[in-house]
Length: 221
Ligand SMILES: [Zn+2]
Image 1 (cartoon, rainbow, N blue to C red):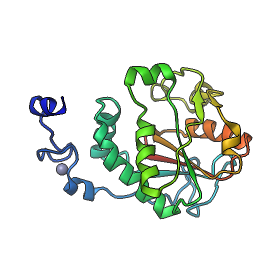
Image 2: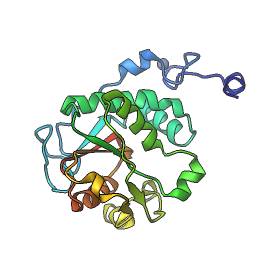
Image 3: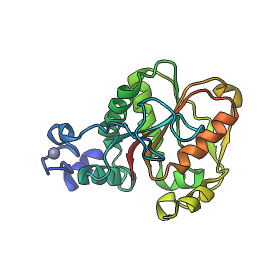
């Protein structure tokens, strides 16, 4: 099936149109890993691994610059055109940015879940695909313990920060609370805009005695 699709829609680099790949090594190497010297939430300069302006999440780590048109194109093709193999370069960005902050040895990974209805429509959870690559690379486990209760309106369609918070409020539930007690956690999502989704997930994890929590996203959208 893939072969037939390759003939009908030949792969081309999303950056430079080079054949047989969606993202060639030349374009890949052009991308700069984001430094994370500023707090995601308030924009103040921060010591790399530290909490800045809230006690819900220890740090939100952004991998690359969303303003880069290639990055935007890759994320769109991954999420909305379902080109799953783009998980490879995207997770490499996530891995590099995380390693800049801390090598995650004693951590578990939790992907931000989709509501089951939305996951059925899409066929996969893009955050989970990224989480699998990171889990393999660092040899740390994925715990799929977060569940999305409410089929919220897509955050991307909401402009206002307060409304985003309201939209995502109490959207998550933890399925096995014992599993996350005293754990260091890396929450994975594709794009964060205001951080409301990560904060909401982090809030319920901390309420259930999770220890340190990093949010890790490809870009700030
Ligand atoms: Zn290219």
